[in-house]
Each structure stands twice: as C-alpha cells, then as structure tokens.
Amino acid sequence: MENGAYKDRQNILEAQRVADAVIHHMKRHPEESLGVVTLNQTQRDLIEDVLDKRLRDIRETQDYLAAWEKEGWPFFVKNLENVQGDERDVIVISTTFGKAEGSGKVRQNFGPISRPDGWRRLNVLFTRARRKIELFTSMQPEDIVVDATTPRGTRALRDYLEFARSGILTDTQVTDRPPDSDFEIAVGEMLNHHDYEVVPQLGVAGFFIDLAVRNPDRPGEFLAAIECDGATYHSSASARDRDRIRQAILESLGWKDRIWRIWSTDWFFDPRKESARLLEFLAARRQIAKTEGAASIVYEETDAPSLDTAGGMEIEPIEMDSEATGEDLYVEVGDRVFYCDTDNPGTRHEATIVDYPSNPKKDLVNENSPLALALLNKAIGEEARFEAVEGHPQNIRILKIQRQASLWT
Image 1 (cartoon, rainbow, N blue to C red):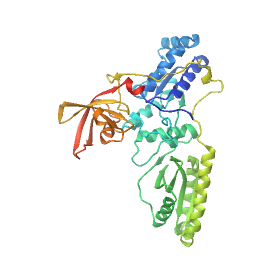
Image 2: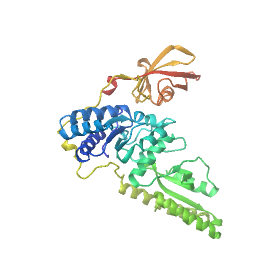
Image 3: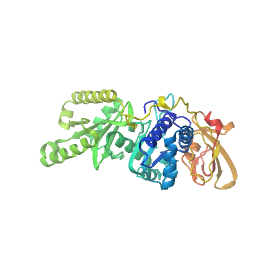
Image 4: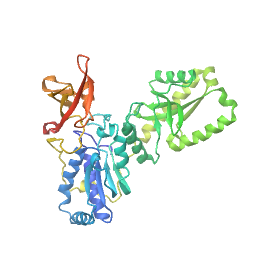
C-alpha cells in the first residue's frame, strides 16, 4: 500500500484495509474460516479495536462469528508469536512495518522476525492457511536491505514479499566471497567510482553472479547482474553450454533483461568504451525501474469495500500502558526496559529506547546506542552483552518490558 506509514509500532492504513477485507470475507465467503495475523502486538490490538467497533452492528458478521465458534474454528486476530498452532481456511496477514511518516526508508529492525528463530516463526505463519493467504503490506521487497549479516528471518520476509509480488521464489545470498579475478575487481572499482554499490559473488539458486549491482534508488533491490568472462570462455563449448543453461535459470528467477556480459579482451583493449556501455545499460535499467515503479502486493477483490464505505469512522491510534506478563514480548523502540547486571542481580536499572538523541537524565537511550542495540529484540529473562561507556563489557538480564501511553501520544 503506497500510503501506509509505520508509526508508534502500528500502521493505521493497513488496519483499515484488513478490517475491510475481514468484513468482505464474512459477508461473501461464510463457508471459509478466517484468521488475522500481524507482525507485532500493537497492530493486533489496533485491528481488534477497529473490528470490535465495526462488526457489532452487522448481522452477517455476527452470524459468521457464531457459526464458526460453534464449529470450533473461531475467528481470531493474533500477533506472530501467538499463532503457532492455528490453522484457518484463509489467513489475512498485516506485515505492519513500513516507512516512517516523513521518511523514505524502512527501519531495518523487524522485531521478533530479526531474532535468530524469527525465520521459524515466519515459516509457521506462511503455512497456517489451508486455502489461501491475503497479504497486506506497506513495504516492497527492496525496502528490506539484505547483506551478509542480515538475520535469516529478515531475509525470509523479503523473499516472501518478492514471491507475493512476482510469483518468483528468490534465493539470493550475499556471500562475502571476494571477486574471482583482477578483471572483476577492476570493473567493480569503476562502478564504485560512479556511485554504484557492487556485491561480488552473489549467490542465486546455487550459482554465483560475478558482480551484482544494487539500485541506488532502492538499495534493497539488485539492478543488474554483471558477468565477467575470460578467454577460456571463448574457447570452451562446454562452458558456453553450461552458461546458457545458467542464464536461463537466472532469467526464470527474475533476472531477465538484467544480465550484462563483459569480455575480458574487450575490457583490456578499451576499458573506457566498455565502461561507457555498461554505465549506459545501468542508467537504462535504473530508468526502467523508476518507470515501472513498485508493484502493489495488497490483495483486493474487485467488489471489496473501499475505505469510503467504513461508515465515516476514523481510526484512532491505540494507546496502551502494558507490561509483559505471560505474553511473549520483545523489546522494541519506544519500550521502557527494566534490567539488572548479571553479576549483581540486586541492582536494577531502566531505560526507554527512543529514535531521537539520548538523554541520560531521563533514562532515554537512542536506538543506535550500544545499550539499546543490546536490548532490542530481547525477551524477558534473556541476557545481553554490550560495551559500557568506560569500555568495559557488561552483561545484563531483561527483567520487565513496559509500553507506556505517553509514548503513543
């Protein structure tokens, strides 16, 4: 959704669209059970609040809820951590995250998904639907920037968004392998000089692309694949046959019209000419990417209700003051966290993680500070380690996570 914005851990536009889809489903497909899943607790609470207001006065939806309650497959709205055992005919997913208001970038922190076991949670989520998934998102795949340190769960989310958009299940891996030759190094340095970021030896479906070039306008997207072929390629028919098969596979995975081949003999004979040709190709691909724009992944049937049919109701952001009790919460930006030193459990500290400058007097720590980076995505009882101001490592344990109403206004 082009105008969806992520603020205070929630996405109001997505909540509106999800509520529309739920009502539409209950009216038009009463024979199919339904569940809604969000990627954090706050979005879940927002959608529950919206649906509570909108469903109560619609007879068809009340009939739907009663019927499926009786069948033992009641309608639910849950966040990612709590959906592990639930199956329904249709699952509606709100990916929740998106660009912050007034910003053109998505913060590269996706809560529990960015944890070491985040990919397992996503894998379970994407298999909960017995018939279909309806995906509502304010992100494009390229909004998620992947490199060698990207958590597996974050990578899985990006790949799923690409699959939802294109039908292609990508398998790219930044390997940190060095370039194979001085030829590749020379081409890469030329591209760096012209402000293109280059990833050498990008893994794709069991193959390695010599140089993958990122799109400067959308760093999470690869603009082109550069193949650097030496003299042995010209003289080997079997190598050329293998490469034709390889190129066909890459094109089937979304790289069609994005592969550029440079011959080493041409490069060393006239590097300036070959550089100009390559840069012209990249500029054309960059313009095509701008013209095509980012495809929408939002599922909407042609007769689904629009936002204008919501009875003029204005959705208010959720305000909450909650502490983690039995529910599985993870530290996010905006949370107030209570922790102790593992070497001195009786000493209790607190910090509120914010996206603006730290203020030690008020126990406010910026999200990029060592303490905040150690706390983010941790659950109650987990331990973390960070470098204190004095340069000494400090081990801490999370005691409590609190979300305050003051942070939501």
